[in-house]
View 1: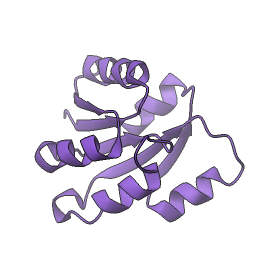
View 2: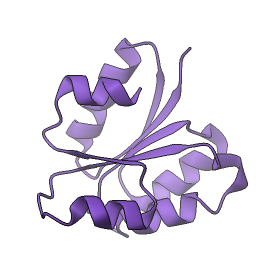
View 3: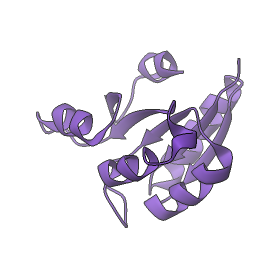
Length: 116
């Protein structure tokens, strides 16, 4: 069954490439370049899954996920950190921020598809 997927990354090329991939897999995708755009899109799009970068121009991915989790309409949305950060404590920080899973860029195709 197709899912609604939100891709949040300030690198438009990354977001567009991931959108093309998930759309090829039969899902519906929307892209946002920052937290405010993601909040705006998510209110009407109601994603079932969101891939979120940690470093956004206006807030951290953790702050964004915290705000998204306040919306009752998004209570079943799964959040996946998709970041180039390689610090050993990234997974712990992501979990504390409300992410369900953590993937590192460049992401392996099979890891990305496993989230769908």
